[in-house]
Length: 322
Image 1 (cartoon, rainbow, N blue to C red):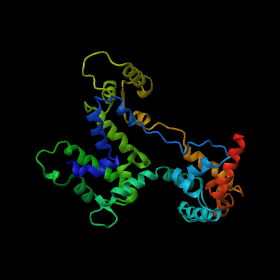
Image 2 (cartoon, rainbow, N blue to C red):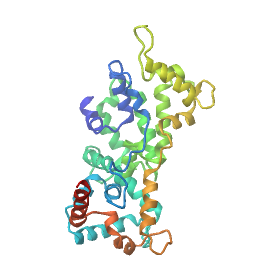
Image 3 (cartoon, rainbow, N blue to C red):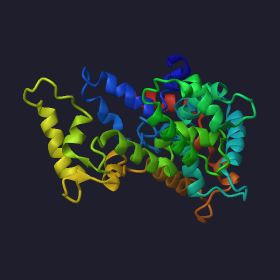
Image 4 (cartoon, rainbow, N blue to C red):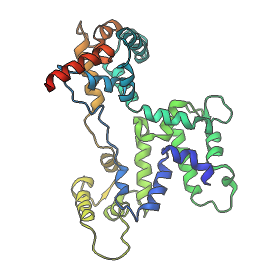
């Protein structure tokens, strides 16, 4: 079994396998299950101070590692690469970059690691090398001969659950996932159209009595195994208060799917939207609320760095320190 599931486990993608892993270690680290909550990450740890440095904007637009790469380029090389990036951002090829297109780019950049991890395991599933992964290919690569095993463990639950998730990720309904669809399958929490599946799977994990809701005891049992019969730790009491005050919004003693979504996918500040608006505002010379490639290249040092901008920022930083 381990050899069949290992690529998936190593990538850390599968929500199903993550739940099984959590169950195995819950006694030694009872707070592990709190990681069900998905927060939008910050775009950069740099301060957002455009009067001194564009480093925050560079990391938001390129990602931290790629921003470092641009810092080693000449200004001409940086602008040339930026021009090619602009063509990729312009998804409808109309010659204009909208706030929505810029936001979509920033979000994709910030989850680049997800795509890189999918690329690492792609060949384990694309068995016929047609650059798509069919449901049958995934099923065979993941479960293999265990499909016919007499002792099927939890496969009876895992297999239909995986199939349901695969079909949700398969937007064109051809039962063959391209790279974007397969990424959504393995990382559903990162895609808006997959969030209902994440909520449903969370409900199924925690709802032990099968009533379609999560009551307070089920909520606590997901985090804490109360085996010794002693008093509950203080943090568990705090979680009970959290359930009553903030999880059970309609005060009926249990969470439905909307309340579970509110819990595990809180409406955080949208950093990508704010940064996209900021870049458009600062670069939009004709104030039509869209950017042309020329406008972006005119203000190129806000989007990307280079040897020159990096050297200039070093001089400013050293002067401030004096």
